[in-house]
Image 1: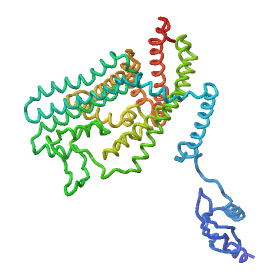
Image 2 (image 1 turned 60 degrees about the horizontal axis):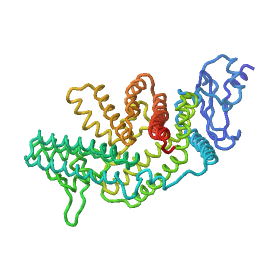
Image 3 (image 1 turned 180 degrees about the vertical axis):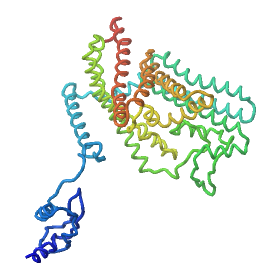
Amino acid sequence: MEETGALIRKRRVTISTGKGVTLKQVNGRSAVNESINGHGDSGNIVTKRNVSDLPSTTSKERKKRINVPSDRQSCHRLQESLLSSASGYRNYRGVLNWCVVMLVLSNARLFLENLLKYGILVDPIQVVSLFIKDPYNMPAACLVIVSNVFIVAALYTERRLSVGCFSERVGLLVHSINLSVTLCFPVAIVLMVKSMTPVGGASALGVYTVLFLKLYSYKDVNKWCREMSHAKARSLARSLSCSSIPRSKGSGVDYQVSYPGNLTLRDLYYFVFAPTLCYELNFPRSPRIRMSFLLRRLFEMLFFTQLLVALTQQWMIPIIQSSMKPLEDMDLPMMMERLLRLAVPNHLLWLIFFYWFFHSSLNFIAELLQFGDREFYRDWWNSETITYFWQNWNIPVHKWCLRHFYKPLRKSGVSKWLGQSAVFLASAFFHEYLVSVPLKMLRPWAFIGMMAQLPLAWFVARFLRGNYGNAAVWISLIIGQPIAVLMYVHDYYVLHYREGSAGGGPE
């Protein structure tokens, strides 16, 4: 009887599965890890293990474990829920698709409601009247043509400086006068010419602002070249510029240019039309023009232009018109309701404008001119701070500010905080310049909005992190812009229409 018991204790325990099984210690108890393909047949013995090899436990526990069914019935393990931050789960593609579907459905409802309430308001002819009142009188176009005078004046000044006809002090004076007139001359024309429309004036001032920044960069880079010897000028041309791809011209090759060989009309006008604000002697160039890429960008430009016009006329303008009475009556609840109603279409138009301008239009120009540097924006949508947003959503302006404004200030001993404040101050000035002057009314809303970015940037960087910071950036974009739009539209309405009605003018 004792021998029989010994034999029973030494009897091998067999575990059968369809494929393979291994035993291991999990949480102080024997467990089975198995990989099963298809159905498990109990007739195939794959692994055998002596009971004596199991961890040393009491006889009672051993008998209990032997009588328990296979551990393949254990279906639980230590793990976090997917939505817990500790789970490390990041694949929310389905949630993103759901958000897109909900966004499309909600805006489709708003669009249908708008059509049922107002009918079709899209009028392409009205768009033309926003730029010109009289087809035989186009002051904005004439103003843009006159800008060539300032381009030629900058080139003439640089040529005189390169041969020593002008001293550096005289050259700086001439450039300062030329740049000052570049900003002030269009302001005088826009304010004096009554046939100038707000949209036409804003477009002309935008051209002059870009030209001012380009000519300032042109002046600086040529000055840096003059400060070096002729040999170092070639080195500067190579160090300041990215390496260009040699382009064959018949039997010859287009090589890098050095100062003062860059002082030509061809070189300057290439820079004027190039999608950049920072001048270089040798820009990176693409090897060829890709026609398929060019046509895609052109199609996007035309399509999104029509979409911007249609959404503005059909969606934005009715909301703005219905917001005038609450603003006049200072009805705060209704003002908040109109603000939130305006926030969605305004933000959608801003996003479409961003893609139309920074991706479609600038890439179209770059491809046409074989301009190689296509970094016009970075991932500003992932911004977790206000500062990161302003550094990445408009790369041409950011590069100009960093190269020609912020770094010179830092080299002169200005602190980092004062330098950043000065950059925001200059940006606030140009924002107000492009809004108040075309509307022919001095209002500080754009200036205040830009300067308010400083305390907001400090608050977000100090108290908000990660997704909370990104949410704060999005909220500032979605809510901040409609506030400025309502302020300007209200003041423009009061100044031009209510006063006109009181004086017997058209309502």
